[in-house]
Image (cartoon, rainbow, N blue to C red; front, side, top):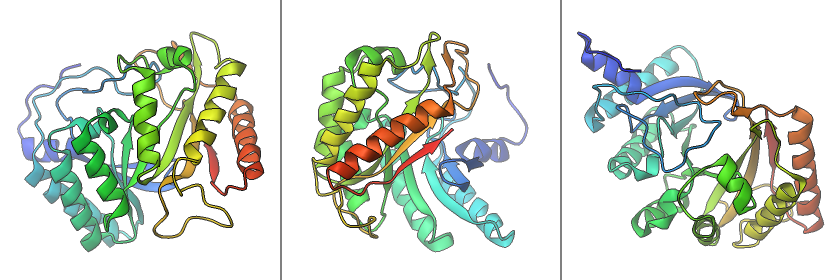
Amino acid sequence: MRIGPVEDHREREGGVLVYPVYSRRSGGLSVGINLFPDRKVCPFDCPYCEVFPFQTDCSFSLPLMKETLKRTLSRSREQGIEVRDICFSGSGEPTLSPHFAGALEAASRIRDAEAPAASLVTITNGAGLLKEGIFSLLEEAALGPAGLDLWLKLDAGTEGWYREIDRSAIPFESLIAGIKAFAGAAPFTLQSMLCKVKGKPPPPEEGAAWEDLVLDLAGQGGGSFSGGPAGKNPPPGIKAVQIYGKARPGPLDPLAEALEESFLEARAASLRKALTELGKYIPVEVYN
């Protein structure tokens, strides 16, 4: 799909850089920031991905992003609409954009001024954790005044299912090592997509391996809290788990299909039980 030239580029481009959307996991209005308005850029090729192949003549502009974000937050406030979060997601892996650091700093400042109750979120597949500079940037943002909530993807517990569900050239072992290192350094939210691939759900051994890996990650840092929910400044480690299903159409349908909600709930119940047995308090939520 190619979008041709239009007259009002500024209005059009502002809309593809900053976009309000209802988010089931945020529980309300999320204001998205897209660092890849011209094409999809991602080292993963997940069959469930909802981003269709596209090409536009747009380009990322930090000044325009800041202007549009301020205007969007101001309009929401004037209309009495609560903004639950400002979220870096968009058409690719945001942490790999050369504009990410500057955009994150700007979004943090604008959030503090215009919507201080909103969370600052970055949805990531973890590829950036393998780059020292990005790892440090995310660590600082998660631990510092920005209070970045990193939604870190972990779809698979085995290399076999990783090849099916994420289809990335990044070695599974390298990715897991990066996630484990971050778990020992900073807090994050773990997110996992569960869906059928080629008509088949994740096999039972995959579910067991995924749970073992989550429990292992829960012990990497102090972030596996005991005795109650996380405070305002949670310690390093997993602070919440999001299990979610396929809810939107994608270009590769029906290669990936939604699972029954009972499958997701069973996975969540098993993990909650295992965490409780370890004396850990980590919220595990299902979104389907």
